[in-house]
Length: 458
Image (cartoon, rainbow, N blue to C red):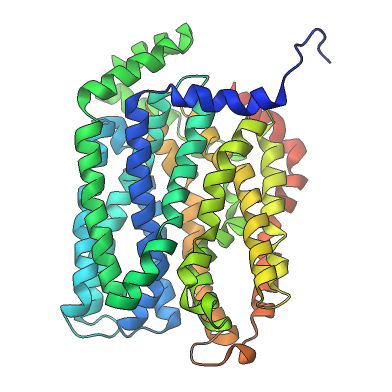
């Protein structure tokens, strides 16, 4: 135990990171605004996507698979395209990615009026072309945003910078719950999707006008002043590398060479299935297993988690910034997994809000820390590819969950039956047993994992 340590004020521990963040450069706030609009648009489209494919003539199983193609495809695209920002820069990467998503969302919105419904018929094919544009664009977009935070922040602002980015995205994810229901009731899902097309255009304008080359250069310069000299020397040495040297450097530092890192990210798959159920299961669960206000306003309940994350993530980050990452991962995944068993008691508002609130606290404890950790252990000019590799298990999660979620819905919560005839208790009990695997595995591997991860961070 170290002696003569200064006594820390808990309130100051919470307040100081926010103060440091508000002093951050304009470029960082430009990233946050872009991420807010994209979070609103992405989750707004996603929350209705399974029902959208139902309207195109697909059953629950096929609709779930189509949603899985988008969500898993995005993560695979991050793996393949995440390095784009390392090569072309933040601004260009963001403009290219948002433009691709704009084209994709236009195709997706036009599909129902452009052909015959049914699996792999013309309307479905046009919709899948739209999904392709979204996949390619988002595969570049998220790594670019995290790379930007790394460039625009210093030691004092980085932890809160990552937490705020995650929180801002979730604030955007909550807003469809307010915007979507009245538009959907008046103009249908297609009408809602046209709103999101317009918001994608707004996101492009934000990047074009706020994130100018001059603004980015000033932000990078200011952040560099707050870093240690050794980091600056490392930056300068990497900037002079040839293309061949960069390629060798990439291959030498690829994260798949580290067994602990790979175990760490793959053991998160079971608990991450709960994220996938947010759009694969919860919309239909709220619409079918409930009546009245819950059923008619299911978007609000589906998007209740994001507003809680917006409130909790920065606070939790401030309180736990100095806590051991691995311990926070074990504790956070445990808190996230356990409330799933509340839903196994049956469809009622108490279990729903209990699940959403407790699960969100757990998410706030580990998810931003994980993303920060992946970005910070990445060697110079490899943030994008590290984010892509770090998200690969998320790709598998989306694929695996989408393969069985539709079957579970058709068996335990089918469309067209009264809520009393559903059997959602068994469905959520099974999902709870799946999610709890992650914290148990991380706990059992604690002795093997601990020192190896801390060495990488050093």
